[in-house]
Amino acid sequence: MLDSLSDLYWTYQNIIHGIAVNGILGLSVYVVLSIGQLALGQAAFMGIGAYFGAIATTKLGLPFPVALLASVLAPAAVAFAIGAPTLRLTGVYLAISMLGLGEISRLLFLNWEYAGGALGLSGIPERGGVYLLYGTLIVLIIAFFFVGRSRIGRAMEAMREDETAAGVMGVNVPRYKLATLVVSAMLAGVAGCLSAHLSSFIGPNEYGFEMATTILSFALLGGIGTPLGPVVGAAILTLLPEVLRFLADYRLMINGAIIVIAVLFMPRGLLSWRMKRTV
Amino acid sequence: MTTMSHIAHPTLEVDGLTKQFGGLFAVDDVTFQVSQNTVHGLIGPNGAGKTTVFNMISGVLPATAGSIRLLEEPLDEMPTWERTKRGVARTFQNIRMFGDMRVIENVITGMHSRLKSDIGSILVRQGKFKKEEKEAEEKAREHLAFVGLEQAADRRAGDLSYGDQRRLEIARALASQPKILLLDEPAAGMNPAETHALIPLLQRLRDERGLTLLVVEHDMHLVMSLCDRITVINFGKRIAEGTPAEVREHPAVIEAYLGHKADDKKTTDPTNRVTS
Image (tube, rainbow over all chains, first blue to last red; front, side, top):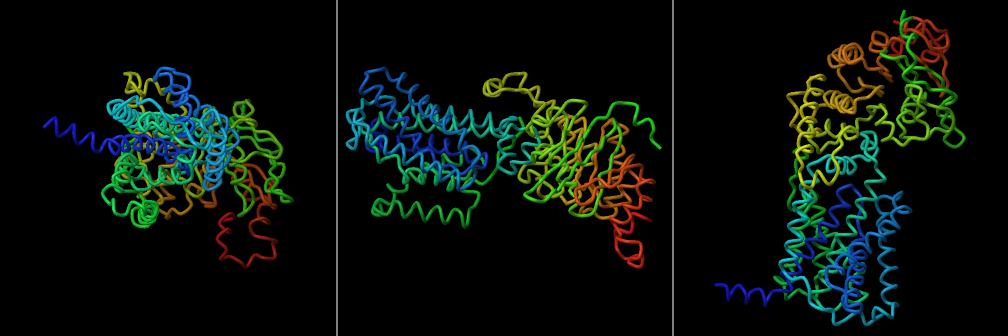
């Protein structure tokens, strides 16, 4: 029994890891979407986390916890810096600025010789593992439920429904926007660092537009009524290409089709219920 | 009538308030004071600038010129949420409910500026956080009972009738423990029975809760029977102020609502109620 479980793990470990990494990315996009902002910056923050984490272990020989810390702090600092000028934007304008951030960071990685330039970073040591991945994911989900059922969760939902009214309720709207962007960047950074230390290679083109829309589709498919929605959406979209292996080349098309179908027929996503906001 | 209302210092002082949109003065040098524990009406024909005044008092729109003081403290540089903390609460002409939230969650959201739990105590679910949430919920139920919505506490806010949503907005505004409550057309969209029931509710806010109200409203019966004092604006300018009796006789007010005296035959015009 244990042997067959072990076999299963070794055969499918990429998928098993991928589900957890993408689950964390789903939570990252959830934070921003839950205040009503269109989020497309997750891939860039993931890339920044991946690069800083991987450089810490591979190039500097630092211990893994330090790499994890770097992968949280670096994207958080970037989010904080770009937060001030972009916070005035909403909707597609914010999305466009975040796509710009993604493109800028891709070009920086591409031309950063120290980090391997176009060849990327290889030989990243294997760190973390399945327990750390799923432990992180579960702790985050619980934390999200706790925060969701508090004044902070209510303020965020209020912002999503009506920003002006939320401000009149006493919600410091710009502060919440900045805080959610920073938290979202931290989560994406951790996901990037964890995945980099499981795949042993990262390249500058992994964190571009395609990744950004894939992450967004986790939340679109799963729904943002609860934090579980994007995690479930991530799991399905990670499994789907394996289940439909014969269509793997059309993965992007399928993602696109799923977004269209989700928007048309399930505007609230697969998990459409809404969490209570009282203790 | 209410000479007593001038004894205490005013709760709200609006001085020379102006809002310019391009070349248009939506509000032009409007000055008035709202005395403590009174209901003050702000009336005027459509487009007179009443809601713009509300938006500037609550901080939703920045003023072009002029000053606003709450209990002698200037609010001019403060963002909306800071003003809420200081005691400004409002409702909206076009109801702005958090429609997906339950009714009671709407009211608790109104307490945002009064709840203190930080992210740390929320994440470890500290006793004081749970206690605060419990108290908030009890308090919210009291506010709902006050406006007569206690039965609807667990319903989805967006499913309430129009009149109930207006009352929920009042409960939600009460939750922030305001010093002054700005009501933007509280009777709009209500049927006559609901409007009739609204008048004693607003009186109780003044008499039982000691609140100060500033009310924009088109229903002249409500305005005339409820307000202690009325400011009339037209084309952004203040044209009259006084007690309901004074305002209703004021020539500038009659002209603003009815046009020149020669137009007397237009008796079907609903705004005629101002003179009735």
